[in-house]
Length: 88
Image (cartoon, rainbow, N blue to C red; front, side):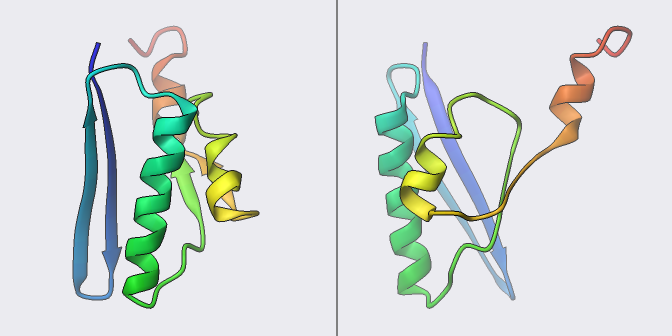
């Protein structure tokens, strides 16, 4: 199984795409390293992360605060709603 990590950042008139292809399922150490690279890119641009939206995967609760501290984290409702009976 291959994992792809992806962040799309849209700030002002600048859009950046950060990604990483893994030859194995993403683990917390992979996500932490990926988020640290993203954090460094933000710092180099003079930016700071103000919030995160994820699809509810159990992979994120540990690496997010490890890298970004107490940044607000919200769940995107779309993937969750797709799992409800009658929505497939």
